[in-house]
Image (cartoon, rainbow, N blue to C red; front, side):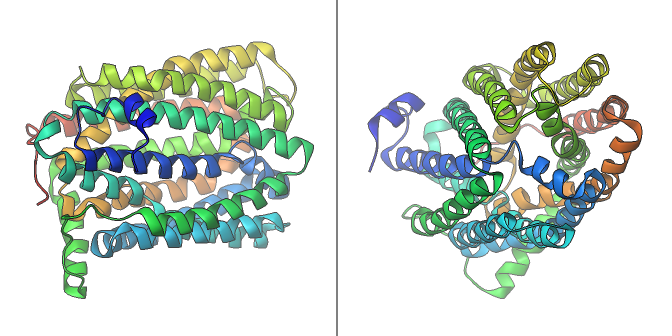
Length: 438
């Protein structure tokens, strides 16, 4: 069933065939449910763990979870290309549900280790699966209608805006629940939500009629498995692109795990305050998402991805090193810190949204469909392998050096990632759009 207001808002009512419209709508609904459930505890999940075990053991937990996910991520991606994403997603969301349920009762490092391992297994299954299912079916459904991918870029921007608004609402609701009840209450709600999402995914994540998948055989599975590795490591522009992603993801994992949430709490002093703070940040990011997609349609991904990546990483790490040095994180209300953070993130998130849009368009056309889920899983797998040893010691670095000094180190390393993006773009051939399913 097509819900006309959604299709009209996305701007695809007249531009895409009926089956492609239904596919886009289904993707939006599933992504919305998934994102809202994840983000309900997004502001204080890490703070909850820090309160239980501290920064150093948090780093160890995250490092172990990265290794578990890295070990399983790529094989599960190849499995998704082999048998379809519905099974993969159903297992992933069910396991997420278990991890949130156990988190309710977690009290020490051992309890949290089990939670992190379960969540890592779930993440390895879920990684790239929904996007892979959508992209390969979209290429099949759109065919010659969207040859320059402009329609794809524009509705992806609007989807990002919708998701951003939903994330912001979920963050605010989570902060309210955690403040007036307990953080554990939110984890319990997430557990129920994930079990529900597992059922919904199994019912609705299906390929379009006429879409052909490869035969289900072990020989075919191993062919997909090794073709994905061969494509990544022997195609020079993909190799350097993935190498750049690995470095930047390692840096962002330190930012997101060790710095971002203490920053929210450090300038507000409460779960509710941090939730409202993050809500305002995400509202700004959502506002820029649709406009970013329009800008991205006029830019060359080969030229602008390296430039924007460098601008965003230096902007984030350099600016916040200076900000935290001037306004330390004292876990109390700091209006200047809040206002400057919101302003900086509003500007820099525009660059992030443009880059994500350009990168997804690049992946849509450069990656063969038969190994799409494999590559969408291999990229985060390699990124996790790079991140695991770094994040394991990052907690100790933060405790020893402090936030500003750690951020300056991240800013310096980010130039290496930008360099590899540049090398990739120089080696990248002209993009040839594939209009069929092979």
